Length: 472
Image 1 (cartoon, rainbow, N blue to C red):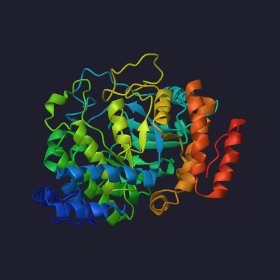
Image 2: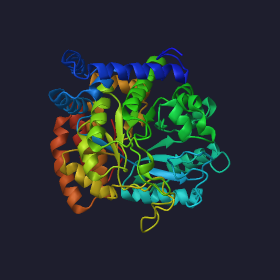
Image 3: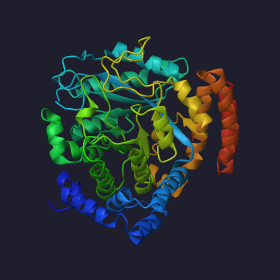
Image 4: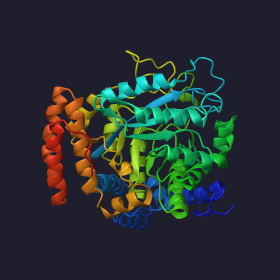
């Protein structure tokens, strides 16, 4: 198979030989100052670098070059996303699954984990609990089981979520993380009003992928890897990529996910809306000692930095698998979305005490949403509950063109501040509210367009008076 980023065949756009050649080139040039600094000069233009160039930076052990990689990541993150951090929460609908994934406790052979599937009334209760925290954006998750979790169940659940209005609460955007499916089903998801369709590749190494997924429909590497093309063919504008770092060597996975991003640009005209960077972690009958490719913190930070440099426009998501310390380290290097107050168990938001018996993975950051919002603001970030672009039709290439041109700040900055103001008025603790009001007063002055800035100041006053849901 020959490497072809425009091909719709998995083994051509994620070509094993191309990855191996890129890694060999990186080994040969990791101490070649001329090559390394030429790549860094290109990166300064904030137009991205290739998977082959990223491989060189990942291997590079020239101290001043590695310092420049971090500095550039911070600069590029600030250029495209400013200090805004989008907030969301996962909502687990069902942990029934027919796959045999060796790293996931949902695998069908696991008899320890209690199997649960939320009814529509239970979903309603979970959503009200999430609204009462202050969440506006959810990512729904479900195991793959055509009997227990058919697409009809997912569609009905989305409809239920959007229908619930409790006090001042409303879920304005539902992202979907479910198994690879057909073009027809992706069209149904689009018509249901989803935001981003998210699917983690887990690993781009085909041989490892097939061993890690020995049974079930997920065993089919090509069908899984080609899912994003079918999703976009089905009319979904925004897709989110991700690998589970630690299943295979991180060098291979980094090159693979960047090749996938390049493929989407080449074949579909728009790259990934988000890239997620979870690491393997303990869960029920899963022991991380069984996986020899675990990624240490220092390497993890470099991975985040290089993805930010290579794909400047993409949103980046860090999991609650990560500790507060790790999340703080990677926020400045490229992360633009995090969850807060997350539960990874089915029905986890309505129980008074955390019950992880049905959880997909252990949560390291167990703080409440308010504690996370407070922490972010103390670090100088703007927690954003904004969903405006999706509701205004600024998705896919329309969103990317605004982002790449720098014009998006005239929407994102005021929208972030107005949704933060909603949170402060309706849900925040007193200390959080005090910090937030000071932050808004300072940051509203950073909206470049004077007319937009003045209108946003008006809207902020109306929000204080009880009106809701203003957006640009």
